[in-house]
Image (cartoon, rainbow, N blue to C red; front, top):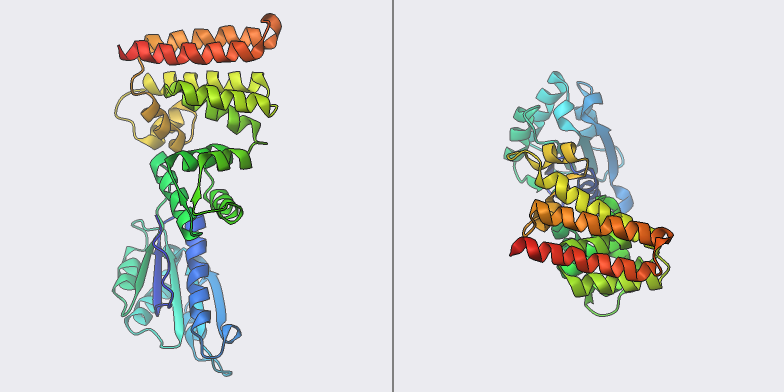
Length: 333
């Protein structure tokens, strides 16, 4: 998770990692901090933003030279690991004695490429380091969502964070925007699961997967509540049953995958994003293959009923959920 940029910009700020949204936001925060403390006001700061791969030899001196009109400057060099040999040598020399009226921002992916420049930036006088590692695991995304609510002055528990992840998906930019909007529109200091669910009630597919998650985790009361709410707001029974089937099939694929695979490799094998695989690993606790097979049979029967063979699609789905939870309980016995 990214460390938040300081309120006062350091002479050199190194942003390490490849989580694009967090890197971009950190760059913007450093620029804002530099503008906030500029004696010439926000408009007195020149901002130069370029990719390390196009930084030409000799260009750094021009970018960091004092302006004829006074005022300071912010020089942002993105993907510094791609800087050419000569330009990187100039950067390394500059980092030993940064200019007083320049805020230099370097973004670096953090790998072995350009490691000498990375070390020089970390050792620069008065340097600040902001870590922006890739956010891939389910738990990390929940941490990110809770942190976004804290940034907005609100609190959110696990249930609310999970509901937002279900509704919006895994893109950090969208999650940050959604958390900010929810925080602004919610009264009090806490954002609840009910508030998130109500806010995104139009997202039928997400609602179906929320029902499925509660069912495969064995939370019968919550699953039935989610089901009845979804049906009352017009979510198609077919979509809900499809989500139940999808959740159970993914349980089976992850449960039978070879042992020892990391999240990325396992995600590629089962055809799901790594954060979803991490969630399924948690959901698998308490399940046995026979129980998953029984649950899939219940969903297959419900599928025929919601498509016209049964008297009541609502009853068919509720019965399927009860059978799923019972199959999980039987697996634990």
